[in-house]
Length: 138
Image (cartoon, one colour):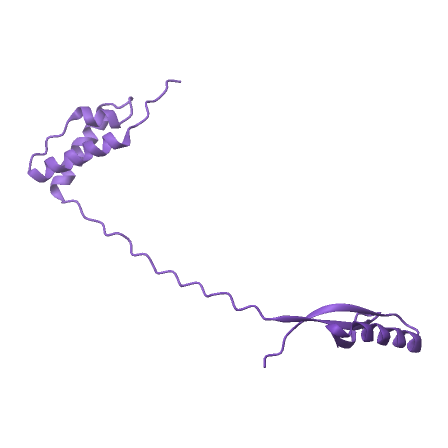
């Protein structure tokens, strides 16, 4: 296949602007060479007929100016809620992972003694684990 020449959009824009200036001045002379660069190489007589029809349409109806679409304002993102302060407590759980008792973090020894006492009395498994709980507001 033959390689197509890449379009230089800056040159095409300059050509378009020049044509627009000519139309505004009242002279609607168009260069066929400029149109030939923009169109495919396989252009035939039908393209020339279409170009003539387009020119007639432009004379009949002035080009309408399009308004830029109004962008909707995006809602402002709400700030993330402040992190709730948490504290670590020791909790005694039974074998079904149900809370039995909780102790302050500094009272770990008491929590382990309580779990051992319950294990001896009830003959089931009890264990101690640290758990994070939200702090109470003062």
